[in-house]
Length: 381
Picture 1: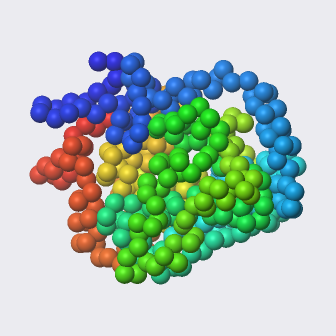
Picture 2: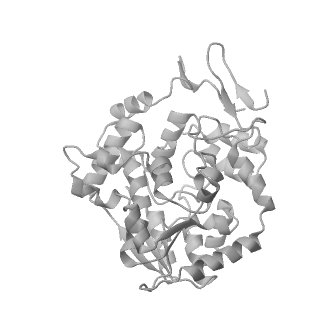
Picture 3: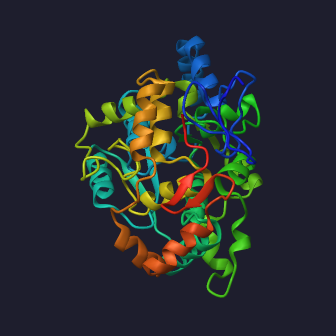
């Protein structure tokens, strides 16, 4: 066996990448015959990239897509986090573009996230905040948590659709997304071109999973879906909008993004010193429900926020696998205590209902119940 595997009698195995710690339970991840995941392979390939050539490609793209009927050169989908803020700052102050920042509102806004957004805006940016019908948003969060163990399905749709809607409406030619997650972190890469260009096929298949029209019910009417519906492909093409990944043109490192933006603005981190379920303090700070989101990732797929963060450190040579494994064992299964009461209130459920739903979403192929509670059948090693 070349991959690092964990087995028990009578059960199928879980494979862990032998370079990082990502298991094959991550949706769409691909391992090669040597047991290395495609995220690690992508990281290794980047050593060979001629970034001067990519920079020239970026400059050519910008020149070929100068706005005709807009004062904005591009849209940046912007949460106020380290990555999108670093992108916005670099585009404006290092490359001379005039970006319009577009935010799809968090479900439960976090004070740290609000502070960080305001800090960047004071540096000199225009901003559009899309805040959808809150009755509908809250209803869908509960529904999707119950049905899918993910309270942010509709947010995923909105954060993908809103920047394209704004760009098409105002005639803004370019949208700069952050990184191509399927290649950067392990997933299904539809084509080599998809590492650079973003289209509706990939958004629907990988980011959302279905069409908002499927969400209609006694509360949600068709008109309520407007903020979540991705524009028609023909409409986007007529508007001349292109969506690309910033990380195709420039080296991508989430830790460096934090260091960069923290040197430019008063960027605050997690108030408790680190985020629930991990050892980092600078990622996913804008939505209080994110702690539950990552915990449910652990429940459904058997890997948590620490695995995610540690693997990204391994990709960039910042951490050894042994160091990462120690952190994963320490933090991956941590319960999301921060904002727990606020999250229950938002979802309109009590602790008993919450705990029952969490257990219903446990994958029996990777979890086992013992006298001491639930444990992974195949813990990382």
